Image (cartoon, rainbow, N blue to C red; front, side, top):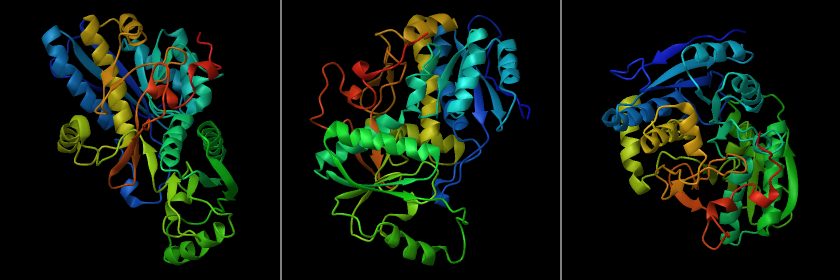
Length: 389
């Protein structure tokens, strides 16, 4: 299937000269189902955050003679990704955002390298992209599964909720997330007392009898477990985890893919100027900011920050600065976000949300690191299998 549509979002007054930074966005039109209508992503998920960052970049860049434009390339599954990259290359784009899955990122990376482009991975959480499949021209804005799992694990251990019942889904991505939680439990001293699999039988997510069915089925799924402190759910595909809170056999809290969830952003976040960002976003797009919006905002703002500090719009110079120890981006999370030089993963605090408030932010107090406490989340330098090329 070919690329569906290609459009440009030009900044007001942008000029087709060396002072213009053109940013591509290869954007997936495929959205996974969700259990709650409140979490249904809008058609502009991700793109809205990128647009807000583009405005921010142009506000700062105007005084430096810099302007920023975006070329939006929405694609469906099976799209002709080389054709998308050819179009972007023809527009002078060398910096490309993408929210495709891991397979899509790798396909884009193969084509981007031959065209002198650098990718910004906004969505794929796969640790493999930062390990055996890492690339020197792919920057990862999205956190990894191991980072998200470590963020939850630190909080649970800090609370002394050390005995976990792990329930994971039947899809490959669910099993990878379960692997991340197993790693986190071992890393921080928690114990998984039992594991259970929730098979996706293909039933309808929405039916008149749905409430009755889940009220009967979830207790059975969680019945008979050894004594545990918290149920940890690994359900990236939103099949069952949302039904777990208040329906488990034992009266226990839920964390992971439901209950207490690790996210890059939450609509209730207001610390460190978060309210100002949220208000601007709502004013422009008439909805709340979601994690993918924040990841896209961060990726585009990284480019703007590099342009400000280098005084350049040359893509090579911008990337070199982002990879240097001097780079840092403020993202309304209380500290600067920087790139790990061993795998090009963006260090970042992870918010722990209950869907209404930010309960906590990891790294948690007491989890120390010899150089950067953010490196207690995810794969640290001594553990890495990445050999950047």
